[in-house]
Amino acid sequence: MELSQIRYFTVLARTLHFTRAAEECAVSQPALTRAIQKLEEELGGPLFHRERGHTQLTDLGRTVRPALERTMESVREARTEAQAFGRRETSPLRIGLEYSVPASLLTQAMATLRRHNQDISLSLRQGSQTDLCDRMLGSEIDLALLVDSPTLPERMHRWPLFYERYMVICPPGHRFQDRETIGIRDIAEECLLLNEDAACPVRRFIGALCETADTKPRRQHFANNFEQILEMVQASLGISLAGERMTTMAPMLRRPIVAEPSGRNIVLGAVAGRPLGPTPALFLKMLRARAWSLDAAEAAAA
Image 1: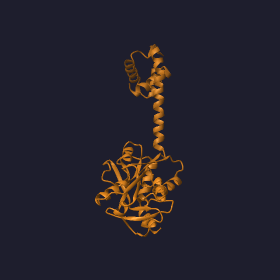
Image 2 (image 1 turned 45 degrees about the vertical axis):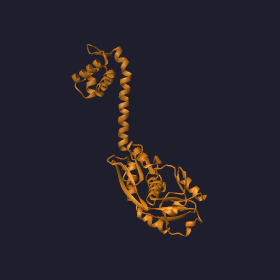
Image 3 (image 1 turned 60 degrees about the horizontal axis):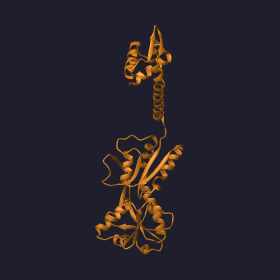
Image 4 (image 1 turned 180 degrees about the horizontal axis):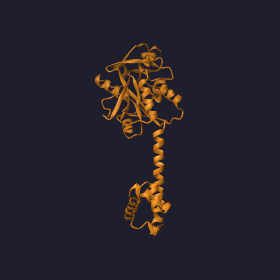
């Protein structure tokens, strides 16, 4: 059953005149007649009585008419929505943040975007790199800020944003307060406060350093987000690590770690070759155009 056959049927059912129906459909009358005949063959019986220029629907024609008219109405709605989609100036913005990558990195761009358009549908999702990449490939997320890794899927395009050091986060008055830098063996002597997900970049970083130094943490506590970890640090339950740009509300000691590597590259990821909606496309341009190195200089000065 072809869409043109359904269209010819609905017009003919309304006009009950083959010539007028052919004119309205912009086809020849023989072409319209052949299309109706093919439709009748497919549906198993005559749809119209043809009597000396007088045309009427058969019982079968009256039975299938509502369903075929609904089909045409659905097609018209789909075309209208597709045209509106093509003209749209905004679209949902769905962003992923890998564990330990702070949402504060998006604040400036989101504020600018909101000044451009206040009618924005925004959703943020934090997760592992594997989960976020799967969601981008599945069209559930538009963009994601990720820690660069050789395991990123080949289909994922990545734009470098900035490099940042890892910082040891300690409560005020900690024994590290008079130290300028911290080594991995110093860290291993402490109780480490980490994300419960082993895919967290901070956990992977610590694990790799400990393996290289042939040591292991004396004790570890786990939480499922960085806010909980900061509360545990503030309660002097241990220390943690975070990227240099991670902000903390409460006073904390922050000391760079001495290791190789001592930091990470943050990249913006999206599925290669897949068009983005207007809002994600604009947001991507804003993030890529941002002077991240200047932010780092300001953070260091502070």
